[in-house]
Image (tube, rainbow over the protein chains, first blue to last red):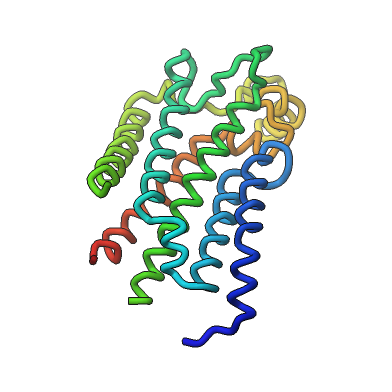
Length: 138
Length: 100
């Protein structure tokens, strides 16, 4: 399949900004619209644009599927650890462990959940897309 | 490298099953409903809405009330959604990712 230079250049120049916008959505999820899921999907769409506009192998060398798998599993384990921390402190599962008036503001727990979920969703969705693209490219 | 990936994904899946088993057996530590139903307002839905509008930011710390609900009060649902995504990824990897 032939591709024009326009698609190539635009995909190459635009995908880092899409990744950055995804990080912004994740990091500001507690103040502005956005959050872990949405920001993670935007990050994955940057990787998907790289894979579609250039070549799946290019996206796979930049984001190796093995490392994406590690990121997915590790962030999931981290999410469960954050949830169990609430039980360990003495509350219920996924309770906000930061007490009011602590050195870290109370929103830090929501922020940490957003970061972990963002990494997990971004890695998972891009992992699905990269696997499907690799099969198609043979 | 591949063995590390496999061990970590196995551990994640087993932890998912274990967490749901524990939470279904021990309901005391599962996330409770916001304690607004105990107030004097006769209609529970109204009181929950008022409670979240007035005290949501204070209780969860998030200025965004949508985030306050879905990560502060309802983080358990979000955990379930991420488990759905994890299962989808493992299904895709099992079906098309093994050939090399």
